[in-house]
Image (tube, rainbow, N blue to C red; front, top):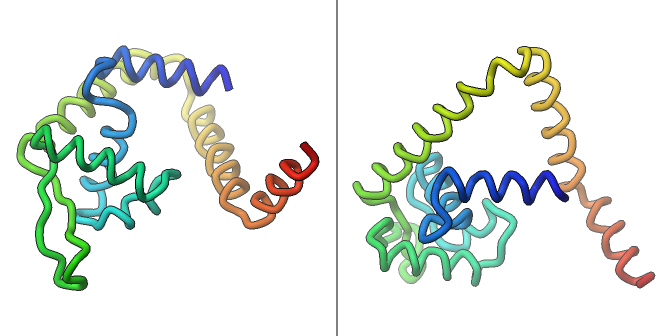
Length: 143
């Protein structure tokens, strides 16, 4: 848990603690990778509720970082897409992260990075497994 909070703190130092929150960065990156999406699809792409994703999208809209466009597949559920400004913001974020990663890359071998990637993938699969959900529910019942 301490590692998570340390990473979060580092991200806030890199990107600034104010407007460009982790939630904002996450939604912008998902849209950059996947193209226009609905709010429910954005929520499913991240570990957040639809309401939480909607709140982030509303703030991004207010700040000119996303637009809503018609959704040909659904009359009421509009698509959210990046703006030119958000593309610039994402490019700056990526450049800052790459600069810092390059500084520290010498501390890790290629094998270290491969193994870290593998361990992360395994944890992601475990946490996405239905058995994990059952374990969490069972442990909550014991409390």
